[in-house]
Length: 198
Image 1 (tube, one colour):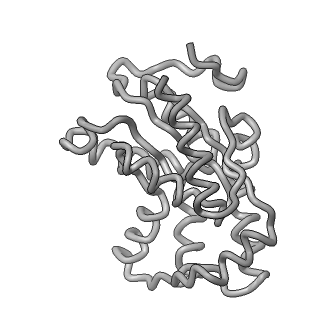
Image 2 (cartoon, rainbow, N blue to C red; image 1 turned 90 degrees about the vertical axis):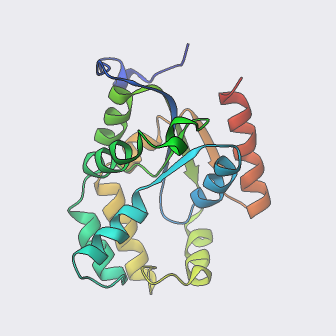
C-alpha cells in the first residue's frame, strides 16, 4: 500500500476516480524535470505540462511569451484550474486511456496535490532538487523566450513558486531526483519508475 504523508490522510477520493497512477513532479525551475518527462514518455506515460498550459493561455490572451507575460499569467493561475482543464480535456482520449500512467509536470501547491489524490487511484510525488548556481547557469543555456533574463528575474520566479506553496509539498515527496547531467538525471528517474511499477 502506498505511503501517504500525514497531511494527505484526510483527503477523500471522488466517486468517479480515474483508474491510473499519476506521478506529480515538484521542483523549482531548471531542476531537470523535463528530462524525467522524456524518460516517462518513452515508457508509455501520458504527459501533462502545466507550463505548456500557461504558455498557451498567454497566446490566447494576446500576450507574448516573454518572462514578464508568463510570470503575470502564472501568478493568477492556480494548479487546480490547470489540472482540471488538462486532465478532463484528455481523459477520454486513446493516448490517455492506453497510457502506463500520467505525469504531471509540475505541481506548485498543496491544492494541486489534493486535486490529484481526489481524482486518481494512486498518486506518487517526485521532488527535483538542484543547487541554485547549477540552475542559474542552465537558464543561460536554455534560451527559451520565457526564461529569466537576469539573476533578479531568476530569483523572482523562485520566490513566486515558493509563495504558491511548492516548498511545502516538496518536503513530502515520495522520491527525490538530484539533478546532474542529463544522463545521470534520466538514470535516477528510470530507477524511480522501476520501483513505482513493481
